Amino acid sequence: YVLAFALACTAAIFWEFAEYGANKYMDVMLQVTLEDTISDLFFGVVGAALFVAIAALMNRRSGIDEDA
Image 1 (cartoon, helix red, strand yellow):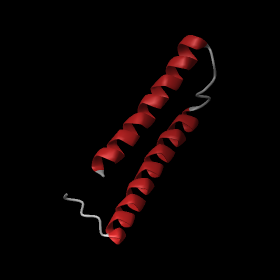
Image 2 (cartoon, one colour; image 1 turned 180 degrees about the horizontal axis):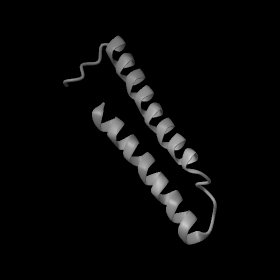
Image 3 (cartoon, rainbow, N blue to C red; image 1 turned 30 degrees about the vertical axis):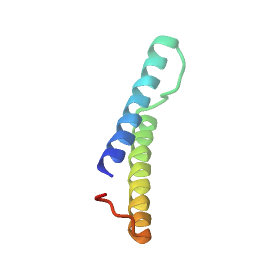
Image 4 (cartoon, one colour; image 1 turned 120 degrees about the vertical axis):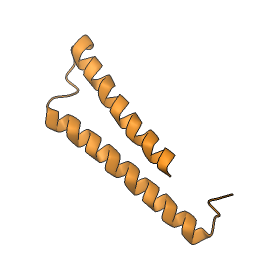
């Protein structure tokens, strides 16, 4: 679960890097404000946390052995 969460957060960060690069070098406006960037990162982290929490609950309820 930790790996899935970390990979999702890393993907969100690299997505923002890509938006920054597109803004700077391709002259497009993907990152309009700092608030937009921070909210994208926030929702990426919250979404990853919710997914991991729901997956953990579903696995626990179905009786899947996590150590196997």
